[in-house]
Every structure is written in C-alpha cells, then in structure tokens.
Image (cartoon, rainbow, N blue to C red; front, side):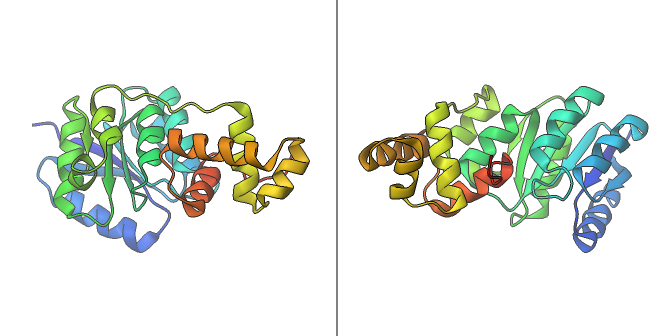
Length: 213
C-alpha cells in the first residue's frame, strides 16, 4: 500500500517534532518534509511532492493563507490540512476558500488530525468536529466554500479599527459621520462573523492590513 506523503509546515520546532512523531507512527502515513514557515513550505512542495500539506496559519515570512494560495499554484494535487488554534468562523471560511481541504484545531484530540489527513488524501474534505458542531459556515465549507465579501469602505473602516483608530478618527479621516462608521463596522463584522476587536485584529493580520498606506 502506498503511504500518504505529508509535508509539515509549523514554525514551532517542538510542536513540529511532536506532529512528526504522531504521523510517522501511522502505518499509512509518512512525513517527507518539514517547513518552519510558509515560504519553505512552498519550496518543499516543488521537490517533496507531498500528497498532503499540514499547514499552520500563523507563521513568519509567509502566513498560512498566502502559503495555501501559493501551494495551489506550485503543487495543485497536494491537499491542504490547516492545523491551527484559530477557531474563528472567518478563518475557516478564508482558508477553505484559499484551497484548504480540511481545518483542524490544535486543541483537539490527535485523532482529528489523523482523520483529516486520511480524508483529504482520499479526495474528501474535513472540518474539526468542534467546529462542524457549532459553526454553520464551517459545515457549509465542506460542501461549497464561499468567500465572505465586504465593500472597500467597510474594509477600510475595519483596517483602521484594527490599527487602533477611534470611530471619531476614522470618521474624520474618511470624511463620513461617526454613525456611518458604526454602520460600516457592524455590517463588515456581521458579514465576516467577527465578534469583537480581537477578531478584527486577527483577521487584519491574516490579510496583511496592519500597515499604514
């Protein structure tokens, strides 16, 4: 039986070693390469030819979202399993839309990762049981991932909010009323399923928004 070839992309060495031990213990799985950041993961995909890429989201140089998109270009047959602590609804949607076939939480049991690896290697999709039980968009992502869309003005309001600007400062900078700022903020957060400023900051980091133009 051909074993499932796995590339591990995780910036914390201790975690990566533990994941490797877990996967290599399986009779049907072998780790063929490791990466400490997204850029390395993309490079290794070209040479290691993995069947499955286990990919963290928060990594230096190139985060998981950018890496997932790049991997789709250089190794379109590789299935991506996202392994992360982020259980935010918006993260699930974004990563599945970027090409990931599975989304697993690090805080879940190790069997979740093993199930995900085997599922995507067989051509299926997988979302962590903790998410699929409580997050409707996560269940929908199994069938048809759809990117959440917000307007450019809503995006700019959220970006400025993440940077730390007050509603008053945002209104002055964009030449709109404070009430309009509040409406844009509420609409964007509803569309993206973000529940507070911490969620907005995480989302902004994922998309590289935290840079002043």
